[in-house]
Image 1: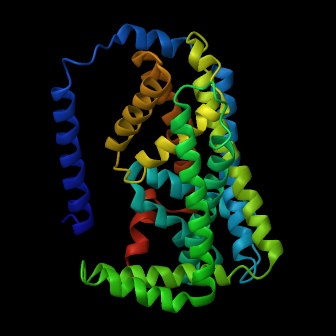
Image 2 (image 1 turned 180 degrees about the vertical axis):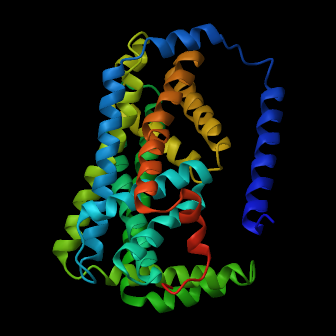
Length: 348
């Protein structure tokens, strides 16, 4: 019998497929698309640039493992090499199963280090905060000082200002949690309770997990180490997007795609990946990035779609072979790793 989670996932996939088909039918007369040009664009890509992008993103998984080793060090010393398989398996699960499968990473690390899952969920929460903060800092520094001769300069300024505001708000929120976490948890629980009596305690518990994650940072050295790794990690992610665009040497706009333009596409891609459905999410991600390239920079729709497809491969799909190999070597399946965090075990 399929589980409730599996039934819910199937319903979401089915609903998403219907919505996507409806949108294609609705705008079918407003879209002119030449599949032959798309094929030509894909055949002309620079394999070396794609390979470099893949290599940078693979290095990013090692950086994630290194950052986790820094964050877990006050509880238990760990080598980054020992935590890399969990990163590979976890991100493979996200690509194949959906965003909720990301919780498989703290589960796998807890099992590897023989630590309570709750402690690794706390580190997962603080890891997400470092990701958000690093991305916001890069957006702020890049977009706020975008050259005036770029198309849609006003849009860059607004994005930069919004990113700066988000960075400041995150800093205030983290400080509030660090010094008054229980009060913040209770307040959020009371605010959400009238809207959802079941969601409120979950949010309150997650806030406390996040505060526990903050408490794992024992000193300034660990904080700045994790922050530096996060900035380097997100710089690599941005370079992966830029190399994916520049791989299309026949399209002038893409062949000379700049870092500032890349950050706008990265921001668009992040927004589109917040709710990542299995398989169907691949096509929505391609559509979102292609629409951004076409709408913001005037890239022909065929070239934009080809570039968005390569971006999806470099940023997500290329992890699947390594993730499956890592799962085999670790003696787990990707599906098992994704399901286990929702099942009570002795580790909890």
